[in-house]
Length: 369
Figure 1: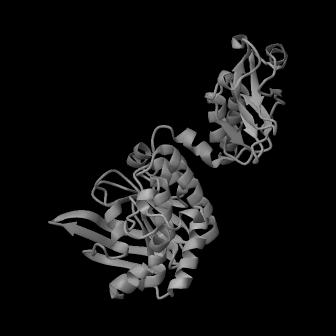
Figure 2: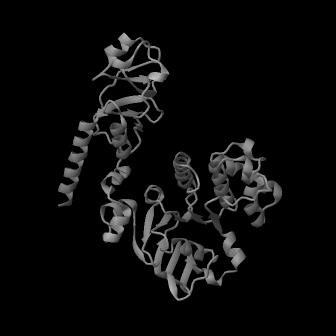
Figure 3: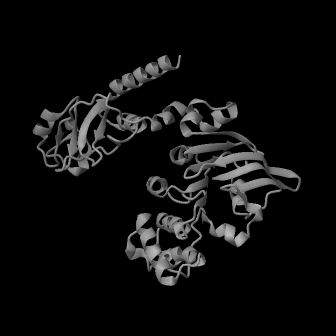
């Protein structure tokens, strides 16, 4: 557990953080969000004393950090920053092994730990002896996470760790990190400016106001459904209802229709016989959907160039937000649902999906009254 008790930081008479009381629970990920200048990064850096608090106490499992030697304190805490901060003259494996060596682990064991962690964060062992400049931005960020874990710290601080990469890579890194956190269960405080990232990753989200005051700390679901005041409501955003669907699973009450699918190379006449409302779904030989084809536009057998790739697909173990996006993005108006292995399960029309969502909302309102 990381706890802030009345923590304040003042610069030249101006408070950056004011009277912060916050607990980051053991084994959970706490995300700090808020507008620029709200003190979230200052709060993070006070934990490992990169910044000294003006007043108040920060404790790690009940032990005040101000009484610890700085070097020992920082060895207990993994630290991941925005641009990875890797040593350019050291290989990937050497970068990861650095924190293990600082913890007193011998060179051979440290390299073994490094190789294990590279695999754990989704990097092939072939990259171990490359240098940071030979990696993509996303790969460098994975190395940064692996390095922070190499000393097996109980606590981790993460300062906008995924913000320096493009949106596609960022989403993949977030998913990989969620998987990793489920396995390792570290006590983590993370800073981000992205509310969607905070809601996706955080077990709890702490929203801070300009001037360093804590506005609300709550689970993502509670933050969306019960914002504490107008500031929190505005910061979380006007699409709170849509975001909340990200926490609702695709349950068995979702009635899917059987969707005929054709293969690439299917003659236009045969594709037309399988079409519904002028659209037919194309799948590969394993039954995994590839995209939609408008049969009226076919001039011959179905080709890859005929595919409309605008549609997203929702997996059976996914969320209602993913399913709604699949229906909204589908040119046919039918949202595609796959099994977790990517094989087609069925589809649901947008009107039917909206009706189901409304029934859920009505039912939930009835239980709450």
